[in-house]
Length: 474
Image (cartoon, rainbow, N blue to C red; front, side, top):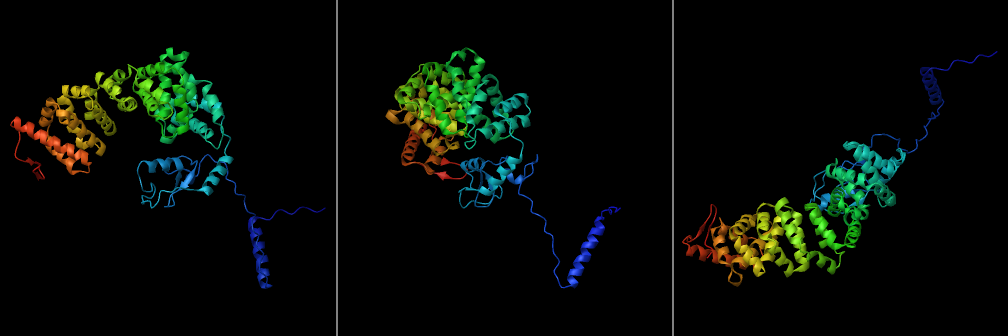
């Protein structure tokens, strides 16, 4: 009876292999090498995502990887925001960009898709919403749920209808959860994703403003915040915004305007988006601009909340309606509020307020209202004149010229301008800068008016002195 021999140890196997190779060399033959079979190119499922799959800007897995001329690869949405903000350097290498063309990195995109295919299946929209509701403020869990929903509404997935249906099934709980995450989410891209999910159910949210649920203040406030987030977000498509505005203007415009104004600065964001959108026709916009409560409520909101959106909404209404809107704005007491905004608001809002003061100064009522608050208006305009952009500087000169010089001007404004600190020097700075010929001419006339007023009051010197230059402007 034969007994099975024990298996050779690894050391014995290696010695036997070496002896066979040596015998083959002595016989003049090349030893045969055993080539191991190639492993298939399949990425094992791993909780750790390769670093190369993450965008260097957002640190999230790239959905549409694109490469810059420097060779660095980013997610298209993230690098496009970087370029749109005015940067012309590579974020990773800090090298200047010879071109801003974005080249799709198809190989990396394919590898990311292969990696995603090895991962466990993503939860359904209903499961993701349940995870979001159960996160209880935990950023990581909430972000995971939002990312899962956002991936499903991508155009190539074709599952936007299923996500919208799941969210719409319980708006009272899902919309506040998404809004909360959109305000305080972990990353910018994740917050934009939350707003994009809200955009899928924006038409359903509109019913909270004009339907039977408007008597519930909490639901109205929630609906206004959601609509404002969708209309002001950069990551929402223009088609989605237009569809939302179409749904808004399809109902009772009077009730809509009243509801939005009652919601304060957030509602004004929605109202301004409607007035500046190409979707509503001229009749709808005129009906909104002619509402008697529009300008009084906008002035109230501007005074109480210093809302830049209120300034933009006033400007949009004036552009729609023209002279009647200017008169309504002045009668509502907008001049003192706009002067305060010029002095204290951020640059963009201050420039818009200056442009509105120009519109007010074009009518007799507005010019009289500016003269009634001459000291405040002159101090605010002169104090901000060289702390805004070119458009703001030219608007500041136009306001002063219309108030002091055009049609004889207002004596009180000339006196207030002559008493303003460094008025002559700031007007000279504007004239010496890159201003239009019309602005330069108006600034020259203002200088002569200031000199005449100062001579009348015995305040003028023979020249203007500063620490760096000696100018003879007359």
